[in-house]
Amino acid sequence: MLKLPDVLRELGMSRPAFYRMRARGHGPRLIKLPNGHIRCRRADLDAWLANLEQTAA
Image (cartoon, rainbow, N blue to C red; front, side, top):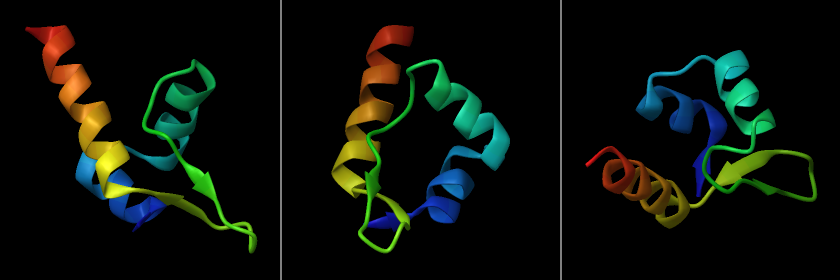
């Protein structure tokens, strides 16, 4: 599972921009761990990116 800074680096986004996008209902699926940390499964990020590619085509 990817930490949020890793996801942000891969997407080339700032944290505020990422959370604005999530507030509009977009973005990859995130998981909140019991300790409060946020993670993203690699498969969820890849699927979300693939969907963006299909939408743009």
